[in-house]
Length: 175
Image (cartoon, rainbow, N blue to C red; front, side, top):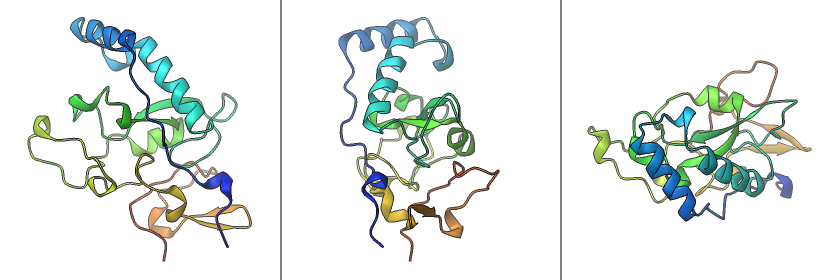
């Protein structure tokens, strides 16, 4: 069965930081603010951009993100705690539901991490990641669709708590 268009997904238009974003990042970084307590306008701007670009769906499970089902998160594809140099990198941020953000936690998503994390370069293609990257990969190649139902292979299934939002999309197509 062909993949329904509504499930085809890739982030094609990366957010471009404004001068105000850069100024806020520089100022809040100087003040040593944590991600959670600062960078308010930058986070609002990129969240609004990604929400529109991703059609209000989670970058991982593709569930609609709404106040009634799951509040949104800005998720770092490469963990910000381990790789602080990527904290504000536009293509390291995606719009995700709380459940996927929680299930990913701080797992290292890089295919070839270097021992000294401060020397890590951000990958510029899909092969640099061990997860499906919404900036580089065609999401629908990693799932099967049966009559509008997503079928996730066993190796892609993390755990289920009554919702479809708990995915661990490793980088291999279904057979």
